[in-house]
Image 1 (cartoon, one colour):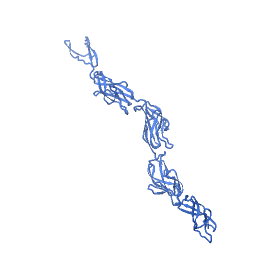
Image 2 (spheres, rainbow, N blue to C red):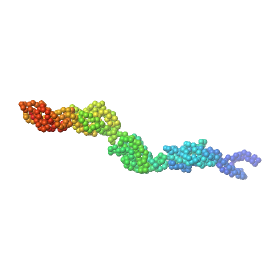
Image 3 (tube, rainbow, N blue to C red):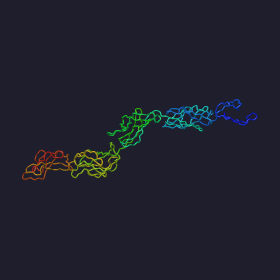
Image 4 (tube, rainbow, N blue to C red):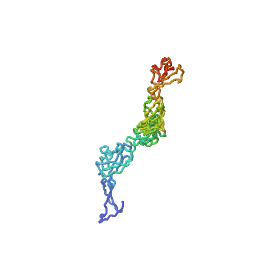
Length: 485
């Protein structure tokens, strides 16, 4: 179509005229000098050898797990389909990602699926793939797919893979370890069959949480979309955006445990999320005794447990602590005591050192009480005071007798009531000294035929120096004992 100059000699072109054609066609070529026009010469142009590969797909957008037909076209250097590129060719595809156990695949000429990255055979006819090439992608992404025959690599084909609908819920937490009473953000992600975030799972959803326990009046909670704490086991509303919870989900646990948290929307139940709940700092002390009743002078092991605000053992309350006990009384020279960490007895009311391990006393705390009473024992570390423990102290066996009289001065021949009290080692009335006892009185003199006497249990006067029977009830004489001097 553009004029050029040829040289003619004796009517025949002798310089110029070398024609090059690039497009595959049957051309009808003619020339003109402006006055004369040649005849038309038919010239058939065939494609050259393959110099590049073009990759196309039926669709540039698919849903995860669905198929898309790929077509590969071989081109010569000038863009013509290279028809000589025919027969079975070995191809390796790349550019899409695996998700979990799901690998991107392309079928070979036998319609068998072959993973990306693995060589497979595709059949070409006249430069175009005609058997194989059915692609399946699973990872939600914008893939950049290419094919390579070992010499030539195709263009990068952009394919958008969208997630499919939700078939499950994945539950995660900001932290797998929390302190009792402290919050932890939960996130729920809706997932399709292949593990992609199911972006179509959007809007308000009704979710119920479970897997953590209450302690006392403290129930595990998760906030709803409005920020209101809702107890585990009660349905609540969370808001999801593109498959991920975006409003609500702030969890508070109170009981120390290894919780296994799940979420359920009525159709799907999430994975079980392991969350370790640790105790908070000590907020109180609890005192217990091995026995609620003991005999005067015997020991009873006390145990102090530190608790956090919610009633968990405060394991951080560890090491040596200064404790003072109170609530039991002295009798005579015998003071109530508790041993310290070195097993030394320390009087009630005096501070001492006890050793705690993981919130519980492990060295010290052996209590000895002497006064028969119902003691109300408590302990304090200077910050916290424990509950009171009621301990009944029973008297020991009789170790002595205490004799008293109604009057210390009488008139000869008049009577005076004697009372005998049995006492244990520490001076408590020995209540087990009960029933008829044989007693002999002494220490007063006769005058003439008049002998000092004491009545027995039958009210019969018995001379001093002669054994008689006196009745005792709970350690105190109750029948007999009327003395005449």
